[in-house]
Image (tube, rainbow, N blue to C red; front, side, top):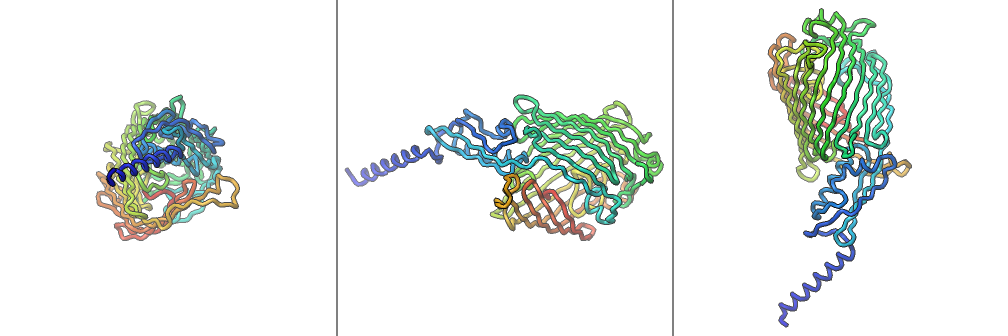
Length: 472
């Protein structure tokens, strides 16, 4: 036998030996072999029903997949479960047996689900607006009770009882699944809010308020019924029918004849369609993926009041791109369009109200028929997300701790069109607005995000802001 043939024979024998060793150990290796999901075992879910967890796993018993598909679906399944905000940690471990059969072991650490949060907040659009005056008479107090994962079925129950400057009672219940396939859900909302102070005009892009002594200048009763359809993992469709009754002080129409329609008291129905495509790695503070949302709402259906008739549409697209090691880039594009030429004041929307807003103009309100805006971020992970176990805390709901610290540089821009900006002494309409600066983001468990930002806007105003949501 020649040396060449001998080498080939030895190589073939070694390959067989390695193959037999891998087969004997039942380990996952790179190959074209398909694997069959045999069983899925779940542990750690003392409160959460198993079917809620299985709904988020992109592998089912009996599925046949290649190795790269198996590893990818395990990764996405873990992200799905984390983004439901039910668990602090999720681990999915595949174990191979009988050559091509795989068992999945899903281990979760449940969160604390009952949060009776005291209300001690400001009666303004945001913290920055309240901080300008720091009027403690404009504070609200009460309790905001939220029960996440209610009954272990990922339901969310929220009850608000608020006193102080503004009074409010609200009930909100989300049941994500009402059918066996876990594709349809419902959401119910009912609430009433009484406000002492109501803005009735806009001067120089600042809200002008009316206060009616000890009486309430606005009483708002509302109710909503939503049908939610989530066929797979990333798409959500929601249709909402809502009822609103508004009762304003007569003086508001005297101060601003365009504040409302012909009467200060009226009721109307609205119909809204919302679509979301969420493909982010970690929704509270994404570093990779994208998010798309579209929303169309018709205020007034010709019932109760024929005067109320307004249509609004907005579109949002966010993308998050890892650049290199600890560097990340993100951008957001939003637009809002209201085709109605006439909008009573109380319906008018714009920059400064959700979902529209750019950094540098938190203190202003800019209203218009069409809004286009973008936000950009380049960030560096000073401390990438690190996990710790705090041994002196005995419960798993709080001892599995993580945090991350990110520095970022940002540039935001927006443009709003208005037919008659001079009427409200607006100096920000029909021109390009921008804000730029630097920030520091702190991210930790229970979806907590704290942002500190120093920003300079187009008007050469310098501001320092504290926020509690992701920048994009």
